[in-house]
Image (cartoon, rainbow, N blue to C red; front, top):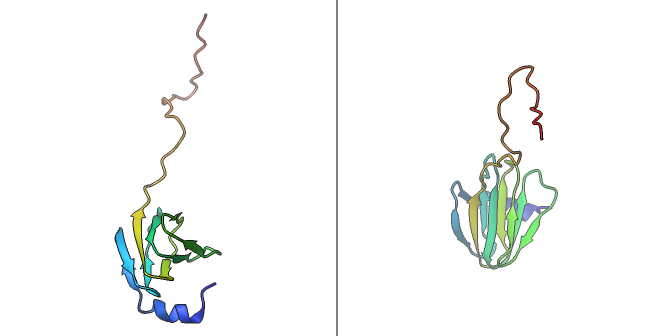
Amino acid sequence: MIGASLVDRLRGARNAERVGSWALCADGTLRIRPGRNGVALRCDAGTLVVTQEGDLFDHVLGPRDELTTLGRGLVVAWALSDAALTVVRRQPARSTEPERAPTSPGARPSTASR
């Protein structure tokens, strides 16, 4: 759970309204608005603690670790050491069901003879 000292630091945090790569000094924070589909975060260097509003867990990321967030809750990345991260917007989920041909009312599947 986030301590009061981190909450105080978040008041002066940088905001990420767009995707891209970010460098954070030790104890630096970055607020990320994930949008409807969430975001994918990748730690490129250093160590980060990532928390999301509505998520009961905090996530610790080291170099090459990735985290995909779900939902719209505010995401905060906190650098435990000098760190770099990349933020990528997730694409909307696509249906995995095969496309079906439209049917008319009362239509039945064809029974082909062998």
